[in-house]
Image: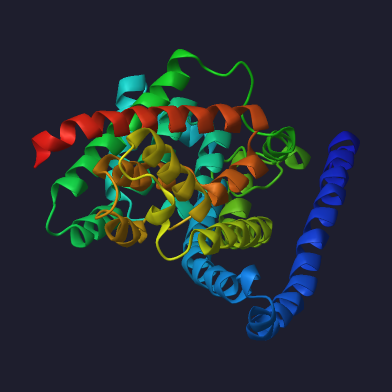
Amino acid sequence: MLKPGKAEKAVKVVKQAKPANSANYLFLIAGVPFAALIIAMAPALQLRYPWLLIDTTVRGVAGLLLQAIPFTLIGVLVSAAVETWVTADFIEKHAPKSTANGFLAAIIAGVCVPVCDCVVVPTFSRLVARKLPLPCAITFLCAVPVVNPVSVLATWYAFADAPAVAVMRVALGVGIALLVGLSFAIFPPKSSVLRNENLLKNNLKSKCSCELNCGCNHEENQNSSEQLKTQNCTKSSICAQIKLYIKHIHEDFLKLLPIIVCGTIVASVIRAWLGADPASRIQANNIWIAIPAMMAIAYFSSLCSSSDAVIARSLAASLPMSSVLVFLLFGPMLDLKNTLMLISDCRGKFVLRLTLTIAGVCLLASLFSNWAWGFML
């Protein structure tokens, strides 16, 4: 039997979870038929109101969703695994003790993990909840989308005639990730970056004293022997952990799906307005206009980091290379879609600081690349 205090807390958590799940289900039930109606009406509306660019926007939403949802699902699988099997004690025991070693481990993980930015944000939140040092988690968040093998190979392929672009993307990506993480190490936040409800959820989880991470509550069996406790947990731990893993996948995916859809709609509207040649709307000869403009395009376009190099290649002929590089750096680290996912888990003050820090460091890196590009040729 649960103690009265814990029973009340558990009931409270369940009651708070039901409205959120109901809202997500309502989004699916109402959103899918509405989306089908818009897709069916898009050609007719495009003919009647050509200035609305409805057909282009709908096709853009479909394309971005086809890119984002598979990678988001991979991210949910990874984050649910972290939530289920990676405990705070494990992080405390195996995480690097020094900040320098933590940064090194984060960069190595970024180079070795072949995933895009859609995967990183959910994993970042879980790692922070599991007490991974925040500067290391932020370095991991910034490094993985830019320096992972898929992004590097895609950039190398897109810029086959200029391999220095891939080299600069990796070098500047590592440098930006380290500087952003270092800024949070030097000036750490005064309070937790996660929202209260997420902290409450993590704190209310039952802890298993047998170290099998089965999620069982042993307080009711205090008179039993330790051997009996371990035997009972061993029999049920595998099934219990798999059920818990599936439960986390279900909850996280339902939570992220509305965010992904809203982000792709906004991004598609921006891309439709920019047209097939975004460079035509930018004063290409002025880097002080071209660089911020390309940062804005990268942020609102919400391209996958494994495919943005192809878009960047199409713009390289009409824009300074420094603005193309900042497009390849800033977009994967932080775009509209990822910002919405961060806001759902983290405090707004932290998200604002992270956004401004990444944007400022990327701007400085692009100005440096404008000076250094001549030496790379």
